[in-house]
Image 1: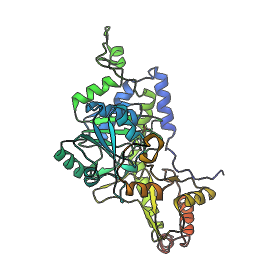
Image 2: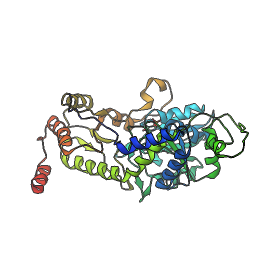
Image 3: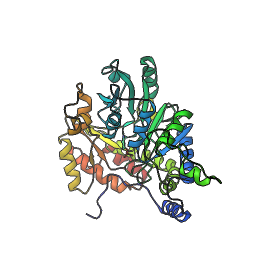
Image 4: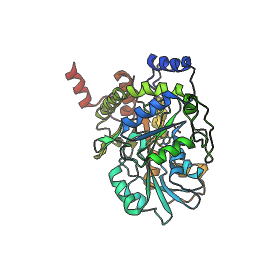
Length: 393
Ligand SMILES: *Cc1c(COP(=O)(O)O)cnc(C)c1O
């Protein structure tokens, strides 16, 4: 169907194409000056001292956990309700991801759900801001400080989300970010670690580049030969200058993206208001989300199950997606110990993500809403919403 509504498309345009072309024409396509500029701009935007650009959020998480010195025998509390990379990053170090449940309203860990699975071997908590809904960072920082446990933030989805009036990432020990096209800001593939710690930043810069004490860019810029040395076993987790060039343009559009996403999310909530058994995601009391993923949770008396509604949407030319996955239910974690995770399983089973993207039109959104309302036994448009449109002309 040509007028099929996608669940998400990145907002890319001529400016990104031009920036990528400029990087190519400059002759410097690997990690170089544009990566350095993107790191500075990104760190400033989220209120961190240092940004270390890498190839993905998965590699960012890997490096962040290396900085903490984790290894076999250590436990890291993670939500099962997350993209699987969150748990996998812990396994890369030979440490053990311990799945904790989440709260129903936000899909995020809380001090109480972490406390339920914490043991004397817990070394860190990996706090995800799920779908861009900010977790209660202040409460979790306080709890982790009490426990003497490190706190790393998986902010893959959370660029532009705020907690207590400041950006997610501000004041974070270590935060990891994603620039995959399913996220709000994209570089194709890409990621970033942010931190206020200069020593960690220096080490992570080395680790992303084979453990070298001098980057290729530094050696190139230097007038005289620099004989590099390899201080520890590192990785090739670099971002390219072509990606960073795109990222810089995207970052400049972030405020416009956030405004439009929040507008569309508010409109969804208004139009879906009063459908029995349907709860749309909303801002928590402690912050504001970027609505990277606009999910709705189904329950009695909504007449359709999640998969049936996905099918109905698909038949109507709407691409929706199942809600956030639960890692502990996947074959990769079969046999892995997991405490009961009732809220995780409920959200994962009963939620779906509706289309929301920068260039989405109100007509497109109305089409999505009509299917969800009609299948839910409500009239195609809500009384309040119809009244609102009438008043608007
Ligand atoms: C997307 C995502 C990741 C992985 O990001 P990549 O950049 O694709 O590696 C990790 N954690 C969460 C919570 C995500 O949503």
